[in-house]
Image 1: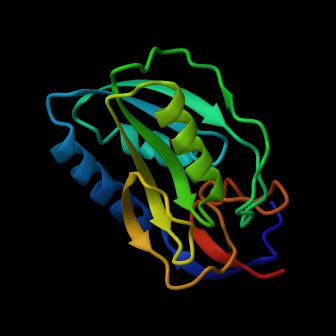
Image 2 (image 1 turned 45 degrees about the vertical axis):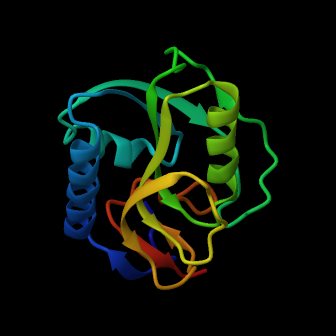
Length: 174
């Protein structure tokens, strides 16, 4: 793998795992003795979801949704693809992704789920959020708030469909 364009380290593997633990602890307290459907936003949320669900102590069902977009694009109008393998009506639902960057895609996905599926509750779990994201009127659980809106790669975050499998997060140098 050519990593010549990866720049300064932002979150190490250890910091990522500490963040996973932090979000899991919050969710375990909130949803103890509940059954929850976690919906992974693919492909970016796959790594965070895999790490997070292994730390959850409540009953979960899993599904996935996608809405292809360009990182940093707050005006994503691409199609939402939800296979809905599990009935989510009347259930607690957690949307899981690696990060909320501009927030445009997450806002659309949250509105889609809450408006079309009559869920009992909806929340979002991510490793981190960026400061200039759009307002999303859904409870958000995250481990880190970034100081700026730098373009980041690794741990699910791509650049030109590369670097998702890098095990840490760094600022991209173009």
